[in-house]
Image (cartoon, rainbow, N blue to C red):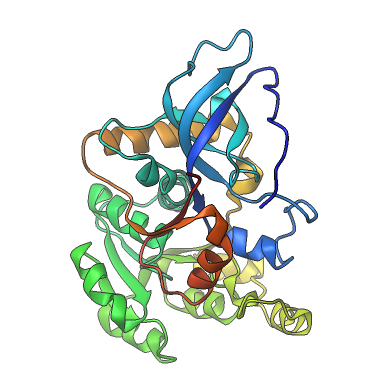
Length: 321
């Protein structure tokens, strides 16, 4: 941790005194130097915060000073004070604590964008999601209840009881034969595969698709197998990633899509309606983030290790107090 001057409020922005900040796998990749969009170190990482507005720029009507808010930050969120464009700030649901709010923006927006905007999920369809007990996985499960979708979830066996409580049909993601288990549960194939792993799992997911199925790739966590990066391993894995030829996609009647929400952060016309829809579900009591563990900011390194070891069920957040 380091001390820094209070950031000035820029035009069209507000300043938030952060109470809690969320951690996402992209933060882990950024720390390892494996996330291309991250600022060069030393840098402050963090994509999401919850706190209280303590200053607003001239001309900004909402939010106002004193409002309890959540916000999305293009890095820099794991800090006591952050300056954020007013359009990326949203009211914290009244029934939620700040720590629950910090666990919301990235994973629920990701889940909604994957299912609704990209995969165009229809009622009754099946979804296979990797890392099903993580933040995005559980958000997918909650949205699936709202959208009337069947979810098959890959996770270690110790997390299966939690997945069942969310209505997910769990499968052991550490079993190399997991594709066979998927075929037994969905012999005609699955309609949607959501894959943040990359490499061989993309190839396996594509093979599991039903006619008109959609594979949505939104990460490549397989490049991060330990606390430190190994560039030779990264290059070896990247060289073996599948290539999806247009003619084959046409012949198979399948879709492969990619999502990087970090590149859409300033696309308010895309992001804001989705977040507002999610907040409406939250106010109706139809979804609520699961906070697995809270670490103080001074123990951020321990929080990263905890996530690298895949110990979390739900979100890990940092406390600024």
